[in-house]
Image (cartoon, rainbow, N blue to C red):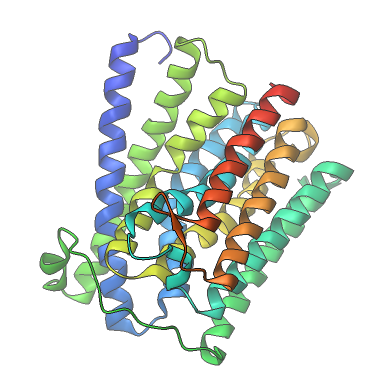
Length: 342
């Protein structure tokens, strides 16, 4: 695709981005209705269903990169995406104008998701720092990350029945296109629709990532840090659309769970990268960027967790204090990484 004209790659990028965004909007609506009908908690549904579907582009691009012998790109795609997706929460905060997004959420399951995500990031950082060892053709650290991700979702499922807090409800719900039409569909129709939307996100997400990679090379930005930023932006678009749609539906818990759930799933994909790459554990083929992005993701997730615990009403330039800190951390951290590892 690098041999195609720049205008064609750009046009395909825009079309794929539009398809992913619209599919994400409809996916959030369908997931909200499914949670309403089945009684499944929105925190769990957001983490597993929305997080799983929106992680499809990351999974496909990660496996593809590892299979063609680019383990660093595979790992950087995941870790860069994890950091970017936490920033999605900060960007989505501007959708609310009354008070910060973190003020709207008071469910312990979301706090648990953030803590578990931080734990997995810490394990990933340890693997990157200490080096991985081959175990049955896979990396021991990536196996540990995958097992911990499974345990995390099991813990989240068990925690549904023993939440000690009741979230404060807010009556205001914005209008989201398609909700009335979707509400007329049967539960089976909703499930089939979610499957179809997942397929659209997968295909369009792959096109989006490929076009971002080609444009990075064609415009001279390269496949280094700036290229990784473009790829992270491209693969994070499903999370952005579903998160904003969930907020407009008034489902703020689902918005947070979508991001934290997607990040837990994305980190578990390191095992798939190991399986696809035949040159040894993928964590051994990375550099300063991977470790730096992991540490940055830990900082961002911790700030998000502090915001959820503090629940401050203060808004500055349409953002909560926690969101502004996350945005500044990301920009500053990326600039520092560009200087050190670019």
